[in-house]
Length: 360
Image 1 (cartoon, helix red, strand yellow):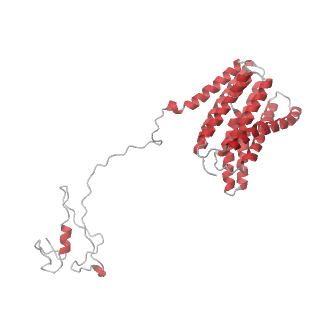
Image 2: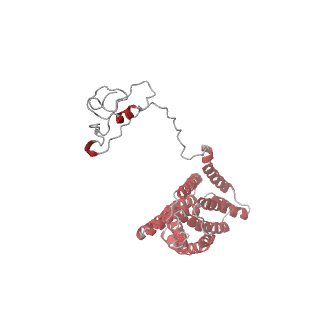
Image 3: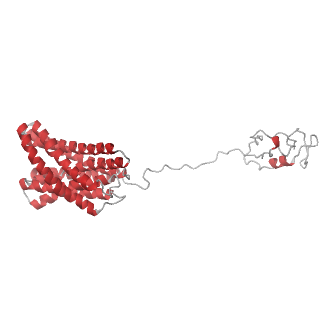
């Protein structure tokens, strides 16, 4: 053993240095540290505070306590097992085909209804009406199932349904009847401009505004409207009521093929999804104190629904006005493609809106 103060060699049982008189007991505890397990030489002790000073002074430098001197063995190259990366959705093992199955079914059903509409002229009207209503009803139940945080009151949903089926339908019929005279007087029926005005003004704007009036009047101040996805639920409920009655009215003057064609694309429900999304966002914005921002968001929802509705109707009206068989086939294919795209987009949108749901 050596004195840490002057370096004089001492006996192992010495308590004080024979040369400078420094106390050796504290140093003996340091040298009693366990031996390292590897064969590498023990590193020298380093005082981290640099305050070892005169070891003979038990009080330490500046009258403070003597610092504790410890020995840390060298770090070994220990083996650390690798943790396998966790999947984004633990436990989900669905294949790509299973995840894509709803979209595949939507495409198949859309094409199936459309093709049947081309070749079906007359059959049971009851079957035709049921076929035209089933896709919209399935879509609305899908939306109800996605509203998992807090289901909506049945009484409010019934009110929205009959509001769309009666109030919105009657209101739009009266407005369209009045506007039709003005449109027919200003534009030649069958022309592109007439189809454009008929689609975007006569049909889309009138019907979407009537549905919006029912939606806002029944739900905006209702206490159950406390989540953003509720706007989608209310809007599509109004829309399915409107669509069922409209399908019935179409069947009075058309064939079952028309009913099957309308079944291929539950348009009002699809338009209601986008209106309802912005409607729910607007509710959240108003509760944060931005009344003008909420109004702009509601207008954005109406405009989005009108643009999608009017664009679809314009292609349909234009296809019905052409006389050449080749153009009719091309327009029919274009309408089918638009229906497939809008149906798939609607399914993806409601899934995303349900995941993004938050309290208003």
